[in-house]
Image 1 (cartoon, one colour):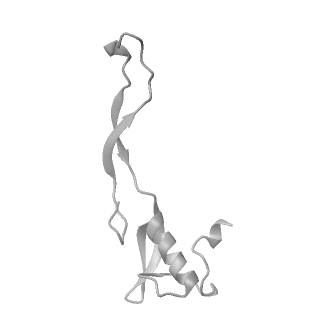
Image 2: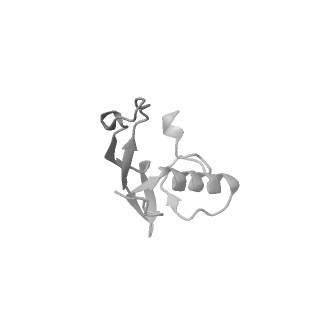
Length: 97
């Protein structure tokens, strides 16, 4: 899965535990490094694409930017779908309160 706007997706890397080791530098006691995935913080959102409701994934950074643009009165780069009755400038997180 990737972000609809910025195309951010999972990146592979290495997990490193902070092991103090032993005096004399024994090789068995070294801090192990294992492969892992760094996943983006994606949220399922409904947006309007050509006046049709579409479900997409947005990363937190893009979602924060959309909410900030709506709050400041600037036209955001995408339009979040809000059901009837939701006012203009209402945060996308109102259902979490």
